[in-house]
Structures are given as C-alpha cells and as structure tokens.
Image (cartoon, rainbow, N blue to C red):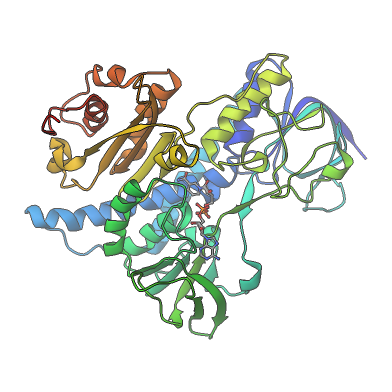
Length: 481
Ligand code: NAD
C-alpha cells in the first residue's frame, strides 16, 4: 500500500475545508486537501447556498416582473424553460468550483479525490468508495482539520423511498414544477426552496412542528416575513407534524398530526395529497464512518465532534471546523473557524470569539440577524432596549414598493452599546454586515447614528434605527413623553 506524507491534511473541501487549506498554504505549510468530489466547494457550492441563491434570484425576477405591472410596466407571463434553468444553475456552480480549483492549484495545495477515514491519530486510509478498501493508500500527517460537513436530516418514521419525496439536494435539481408541494419544516431550507417553487408556479404548503416559522429568529421579524409568505404559499400549518407519507403512484398522501392545533390556528385536513414533498427538518453532522474510534476525538450526543475554542478536538493532532463541529451550521462560521484552526496549528493563541455570527434567510423578504436576539435576551434575563424602525418610513423602500420591512437595533439600556441587529426586508442579507461590524467593534448606537448613511438607501433604516435608540429619528415622530 502506498504511503504519502503531508504536514497538514484537510478533510472535506467545502467553504470551511478549502478556506483552511488555503490559509495553511498561505502560511507556507505543506497542505493536502482530501474530498471524494472533483468539484471542490462541498455542499454549499454544489448542493446548497450557491445553487439555491441562483434559483432564488430567478424567483425574485419573476416576482418583480409581476409587482411592477401595477406601476405601469407590464411583462407577459414568464416562459419557464427548466432545462435552461438547470443549465444556468450548473454553469454557476461550475464557474465557482473551477475558481476554487484554480486557487488551490495556485497555492500548491495537493488534492486527493478520495474518502478518508482514520487508521490512527496521524494516518488516514484513502478509498475510492465510502468505507471501501483503501485502494488509494495511506496518508501520514502532522495535523488534520476535519471539515466534513453535514447532510439533510431524515425523519426515521417517515422513511419512504419515493422520487416524489425529496430532500434539499433533490429539490435543487427541480425535476419538474409540481402543481402542489408540501414542505416539511419551516426553517431556512424549507422557506428558501418553497420560495423558489412558489415563484415557478407551484402551490406550496408548509408544515412546521413548532408554533412559528424560523424558530431561532425574533417573532417581530418573522411576522413581517410570514405576512408575505402567507400570500405566496398556499397554506402554512404550524404546531403540526406529519405522521405518515404514502406514495399513491400519482402523488404523496400525507397524514397530519393536528393534536396541538388550536382554534386560532390554520388547521390542516387530516390527510392531503401533494404531487411532491420536500423534507427540510435540519441537518445531521457527518461524524460517522470516519474511524474516529481509532483516534482520541470525541463526539457528543447530537453527533457533533467536540472542540475547544481553538477548534482542537480531544486528539492533539486533529482539529474540526464547520457543520461537523457544531451549530450554527453556516458556511461563514466554518470559514472563520478555518482560520482559527490554522493559526492554532501554527502555534498562535487563536480562539473563535466572534461576538456576532450573522444569520440570513434568503426568502422574500430576506430575514437577517446578528448578535443578541430579543428572544435570547429574554431567555437569559439580559436587560435590553429595542429600537424598531419600520420601513414604511423609508423613502427607498417606498420607491421600490417594499415598505414591508423592519429594522431593529438592540442596545444595552445604560450604555446604548449595540448588542444585536435584526432586519427583515429585501436585501437584509447585504445590510446585516453593518450590524456585525458594530457589534464586533463594541460600537454604541451613536456610532451608527453619527455615521452618514447614503440617501436614499435601505441602509438608512439601520442609521435611523440607531437614532431611535436615543428616542427620536428624522422619519419617525415620537411625541415626547
Ligand atoms: P432548520 O433547523 O433551519 O429548520 C428545520 C425546521 O423543521 C425547524 O423549524 C423545525 O422546527 C422543523 N421540524 C423539525 N422536525 C419537524 C417535523 N417532524 N415536522 C415539521 N417540522 C419539523 O433546518 P433546515 O431548514 O433543514 O436547514 C438546515 C441547516 O442548514 C440550518 O440550520 C442552517 O444553518 C443551514 N442553512 C442555512 C441557510 C442560510 O444560511 N441561508 C440556508 C439553508 C440551510
């Protein structure tokens, strides 16, 4: 069996893994990146963030052409060419993956296309098939960075093999535009992909187990989103679970558990048939099948590899980053951890101490938050003041017909230090970075309010939200108390 050697091996070429490989190479380390796929970029680039945002952009264009018809600009109904759409999506993926490949090559990162599993703390076995014989030999290393990500969670009780029942990977392929689709899970993926399918003409319904969409986000922001998606989606069933899925040969028969539904909720029928079902109930870390038992790495009850603040596992030779190393399962968290792990391997006192990891849901409108949420403040008994700036008072929001937004700035009552920022509205995902910067820099609301925001932009809602933390803002009158 051939044995190769490397100073640092990164396992998994997603946005965490390739960022780690590049950071290590930039520090002059000899780096090998192992991933079974020739297309670098992992789930995010190939089956997640990038293809979904490509499709969400098309969805936005379809919706905008409908909206502008009220304002004197009429377009015909869109002619949807699914083959061309898939081709465009694949072109976007290929362009990005090629870019990552070129960056790896330029940095001299050695790439091995194989499945890796640990033989011991400093040796990997490399196979062409998952769990197969190590036909590609062994790789000895000084340090490993585990960045193997996550996969869609399955609901064991609904285990059904049917092309009509899709996970996010299958749904991104848009096998067809079904007449009706049920999305199980009102989280990030369910709402984003539901938005795409609805714009393409499908009647989308959503079923969510908890009592609200996007359980992690503040309710006032979710209300803004929910108001709109209640119009674009056919039905939204809250406090409801699916107990059975049956492929009838023509559709999927869905049985709902409605025991928690009350009179004030939209009640689903006991059973309903849908052309397709999308299951989006979270993601599971890929910590199995890696031979971790042959190392000192520990895994917690949820399947996440346990790490310290420097991304070190319990094995001194192995670091872990990204989805496999804990929540939030977000690409930008993984990329940030990548740099921490590499710095720690280089012997520096690096720790992951981000004050704010932004979260963005790319729905229409987008919903984004950073730092402390109002819900967390209440749960943790942290005193806060919240300044809310409704987009009805934004000139730019009016100009684009999108007054349905809300920006909120959460501050410490005594110092007015910015603890959190939340935005629901179009382009919220682009705007949240100002909040991240403010929180990271320990800014007080005055720092934002005194920074001149360009007019007319939606970013002014952040500036005026910060002004409101002191009682008044130009475009929002509050009578003196
Ligand atoms: P999620 O955790 O965001 O949402 C899953 C939802 O399913 C939750 O609201 C949960 O209450 C609900 N649920 C769970 N079991 C259910 C059941 N049996 N019936 C009905 N509802 C049920 O998970 P996701 O949407 O699958 O996304 C997975 C992860 O991927 C997220 O945690 C996120 O970090 C990441 N992601 C991020 C983005 C982004 O950054 N824009 C986009 C997609 C995915």
